Image 1 (cartoon, rainbow, N blue to C red):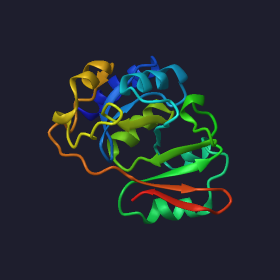
Image 2 (cartoon, one colour):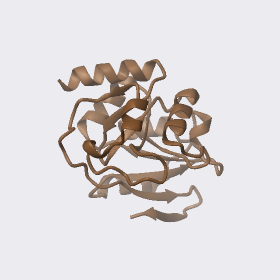
Image 3 (tube, rainbow, N blue to C red):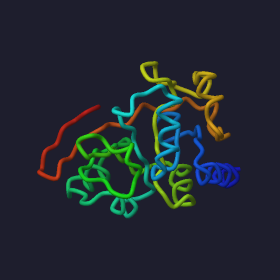
Length: 187
């Protein structure tokens, strides 16, 4: 079942579509993080300003290194030692859609910690956007049944996994500058 869902989601991602999927944190809306028009579709669906960037998921630390000019050493410790998913904001991302990069030339990236997301990204061979499955300004849904019809009807594919599970909390977000600065954005 998991392999069929991965295959279906990858097909949509390859065509520039957007998916609704369970992540290692909350239900997410995702697309090919290297496809500017796909990223734009998510901004429109969420009614979100493109000035407020989104998180990007990679499958492992090697893939992370392909999309960031330089991964600061403390990032590896944070990823290895964190007890829950941690998203890190990096300076100088590369190879992703321009409208995914913040005005200060940073990008929030998380190495996915759940099997479904890791396998999805490995099969797709590119990073995937991950943003909460809600309209901008509304509460993040705690489970699939709380996702609005507008979101459900606005995506190209809904992954048929974990729809009865209450999803965990959002990830911690930490900004790590190449100059050594560390700032906690969300605990």
